Length: 453
Ligand code: HEM
Image (cartoon, rainbow, N blue to C red; front, side, top):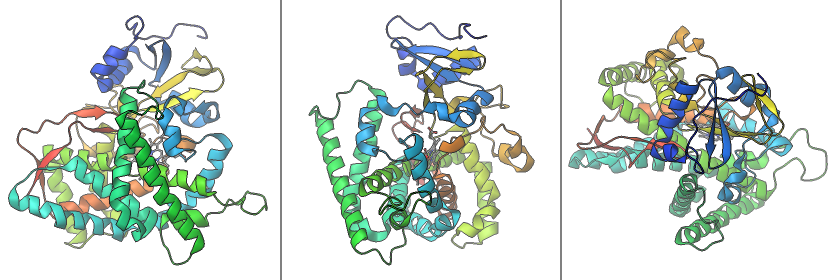
């Protein structure tokens, strides 16, 4: 098929498909897959994009021929300043070295040890905020509540109690950085950070504050290394077994450590917060499923606070989370750029092309799912769970760049859901309108307002 024309919409002159994207990005990627099939070509301004909709082709890009693909983040100017050469944005040999260094840190033993902290934080949230809201009948923005809970958890996981006195500064700075990524996602031509718009000034201030705190912690830890049990300590102690013997070669530099810590901060909370918010929403719309989750929690735990050891027994709770990740994948779109010419689905893809791979579009593609728009956790029960192609359902990505925080997120989400469901039920507030918004992550537009009872 070599030089054959790849199907796709014509789009308007100059803007290409921007008007459709602006109207509804999610509908757009879904329609492209339905109307044009396995590979679709469209233009954003005059830049060609190739949306890949076949699981074998996605596997080829993310896994089998991954060495030919970068993420193509050069197009987001502040990402380099914010995340530097952290795991999410790094490439090639430097990425591989960091991944090798960091993988043992995310070993399930280390994550399970944080279970108590995760449930303690969830109980604290209920007791300090939700119990009052329950008494007064005041609706809460559950999306924001989950964001603050998962930020607290990732802060404590990274730095133990060390930043509790600075938690507010860190929380505010991280919120500014997430907001910046969102603005630049929505307005790719927003002035670069050195132009002093009010937003850019706030962005640079947030970066300075965050850097000051993080470098301060790194310096203090290097001076007094003992007695800490948190991720920053594990990262400081990590040594690359394949490094040569030169002093310092095997460990991370302070700059690298800073980049990894900010990356984990950012990658490690908004995604899980959205998963939890969407789960509470889905359960409020499917009460019989919620009842089944409650019965399982009651039967396994008998009122006791869950630990990581209980999680394998909470299988229906896990299925509910998996089904939520199918319908509302927080990382709804992955991007790639090929280094050399390649061939996908029998078509030529010239070097340096942008590829769009959407878990959202694949997870709702009727070619691979029965009644794709229906929330049905049974899809992930026993044998049925094994029938899906690895790249028809991939909320955490796949291949070598698979999410390093997958285990962390799964343990965290299951523990928080069980702990909060033991204490209350959430119902959509009157007049609440729930709509998906596809920014950097897939989140509820204007929050998710719910009542606690
Ligand atoms: C429900 C929660 C989460 C979802 C849906 C999610 C999803 C993803 C996806 C799809 C990727 C691959 C991106 C790509 O290939 O372009 C990824 C990478 C990554 N995630 Fe997550 N993630 C979640 C939670 C977390 C957590 C809790 C952490 C850290 C504590 C984390 C840290 C990272 C990092 C560092 C990478 C880059 C890995 C690499 O390239 O080597 N994520 N995540």
